[in-house]
Length: 253
Image (cartoon, rainbow, N blue to C red; front, top):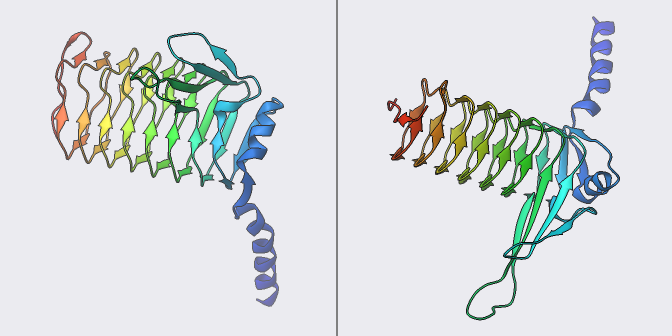
């Protein structure tokens, strides 16, 4: 028995370091991205704001307003991580007031390689407004404790948010999903905005729970859309929503 207990204690001693959360400064991750090193972290606490809008490859984009675009050119993988600061693929700055209007400077980030952020905790804002995901994007099993901004985001390959919890405002307004997308068993604890969102391929909202307002006004849904066992606890707006080109409104559970 004594030998067995000793063996168990030794095994726990070996396992404990691998299970414990290590800490990494966000600046170290940004430096790796700028060196074009693949990013892969597991069981890690990231301190500071992970601001992807100021990468070394940032370029000015000509348009009606000042705009700058950074591009993440390496795969991103975060598993069971905690982001203590903001996760920013978008931010804006208001410049000095001129001629009775605000000149807004916008910083965006695109992703050319797969993005996999799973079973993670976002303590503050997660902003991906205008981001283009060229490869598969997985945001499954995450907890967004503050706002989650995916407005105008574009997903060229499958996108998966299954099992995630949105404790703040979830903004997918005007987002575009070119391939299949998954929101199975997602909990929206605050308003969820899918107004004008376009799903070109099947989308799965089965067993999702909307605890507050769910806005799907003008949303385009394709054949194969799944709302089975979806619960709507708050108000809903499916005005002008279409499913395969026809007017649509799901049964409330």
